[in-house]
Length: 245
Ligand code: NAP
Image 1: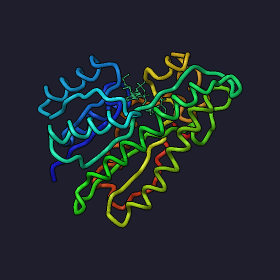
Image 2: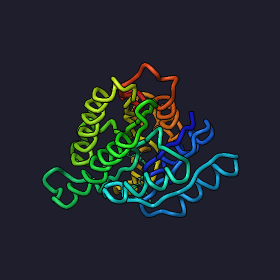
Image 3: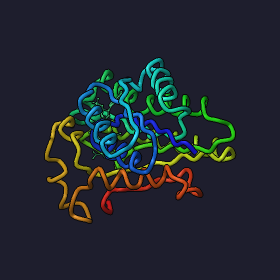
Image 4: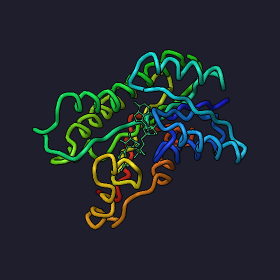
């Protein structure tokens, strides 16, 4: 089967590591990005230098028409999309629940949940009825912790993503299309700087049973396994990648 994957937010962090590993496994990869074209293009160049196939595509995955354009462009480049990684996500500065304003709350929900809904729906609407396919959603350990005093909005969005994963996996199971999730803990990416604390992973490492943060590659390994036929009997499942937390 020709394996064609869209990785949302594939230009940086966990998405970049996932895009590169998928390309190394023979997938043709659409590296989606929102604003950082340079980072996405660097991922594409690295993949091509190693003999893989990839292209980058700007789309705000919380926007319906952008999502349609993203799938149209990927189909045009590589053929029907067979796999999807809903990885794009945002996190804003640490604050208590009562300080969070509505604009921020809505932005987090749009970026983290609506994006997952729109991309998954587009994927399902277009998937070949006789082909099997697979979706992996990048949730967070925050869906279990609630992230009090930091980002309850973010944790809420990831909790919603977990419900989406469960419900959609049960709807699609009879068709043989699998939907799973990874829930990373503290991973070394730019995201913590966006949350206002670039050294957050180091600060919290002593509280992690494995005594360290995780790497994007460690998360990518789990995503790629869940997406693959090696995980053919796994659906509606969650892999916690949080060093034992
Ligand atoms: P990151 O390095 O900040 O990357 C986030 C990516 O999402 C960027 O590529 C960004 O695009 C993209 N993005 C954001 N909003 C988008 C939108 N509306 N449309 C398209 N792309 C969008 O963060 P990361 O740590 O790798 O995070 C990846 C996923 O892992 C997120 O869902 C995050 O919640 C989850 N996660 C991360 C951690 C952690 O500790 N790092 C822990 C648990 C879960 P640009 O490059 O164009 O800005």
